[in-house]
Figure 1: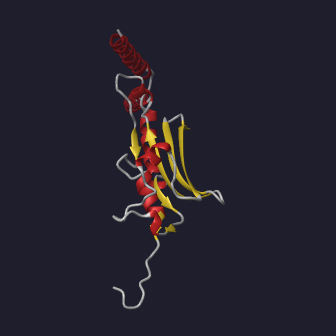
Figure 2: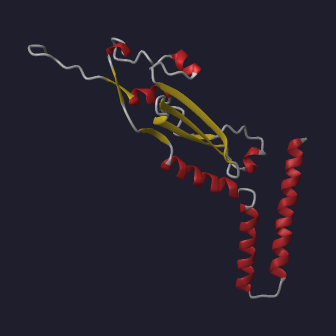
Figure 3: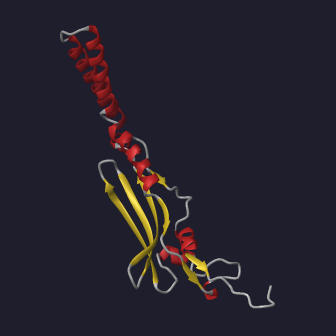
Length: 193
């Protein structure tokens, strides 16, 4: 039933566009002006339902290039008690990630989701941050954007999950922490190799 309604709505939309174009081209003018009116009217009727998809993609790419990704403003050296023998951080655990905790004293992990970042173009923003608790200073962040497409796509049969940048494959918890927390360099004494 919904499919039939959409087909009827589309047919009415096309019928209105054709009628409007015929009416505008029937007005007295030159042949080239009629072609210009006809093409302009066709462009308006074609772009009307998809303008937000086009503008949203352009703005989304701009956000991805300018604001998306990982930014590390300060690295923190941690002693050997924070590292496993294989070189991985003891502070990076599945449980800590799931609970949104940071297992390094003096630092916290924050996650912010803003679904209404841009409601007109249907873009959301997600930001993960490592914050120095004593000063409240953000020392690193990973910013992602999600474009949930335009009005027409969201009101069609398509299952809209959105497109994300950086992709989900890009490092979040582990990758960000591995860039912020580094091993304290070991100083070798004389005669040691």
